[in-house]
View (cartoon, rainbow, N blue to C red):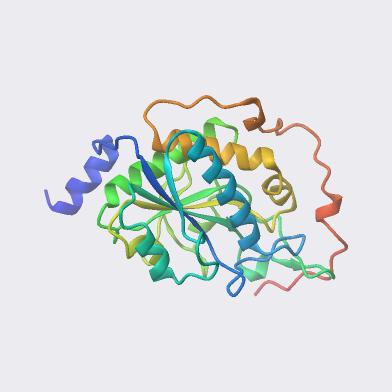
Length: 261
């Protein structure tokens, strides 16, 4: 049996041991100069990332976990600088919000980008990270915790189309392998990237904009990095998926959708 087969068997059998982490680096993805995706309401992704990172940071610190924010001292760090900040950490978590490919986007008169193509979370790892197996175990922990709290993974990154076609490791958990993600591959500590919600989807964006959703993510991350299960406060409960959702503030009048190729 070759090394690749042994590693695959170890992953499948769950043989990688990950203990609790005491020092975490939170990377709030993108910045004002590189704002990331545009949401349905025309809000930039990096603002959602910052809001989520701040909530997670407060939650972890209250639990006695050391936290470093990559944007704490500089709002425009390079990817190399972000990775360097995680040098002495047990884990780096890069926080993002998701989009879809341009052919599935409908533009609004207010500058938003809307689509019902996908919704949900996804977690990425890189096999080029020296601690790939630990990274994968953290990814599995996080995805399981998110699912237990009522969130569902998106599988659209595995579609065989330009810009996607990512390797889907665990469909039931929404875990992908994307080796060229620089923030994951250039550091020597375990690292995962979370796409918390698809903000071009108006319902997903409404959730992402709420403090209750950020609390859910924060609690799932706390469970991920500590042994055992952390209690979830009442504020961490998501509304029932069957509850009516008022989305009109996030869905302004649409222009004609782009033609698909």
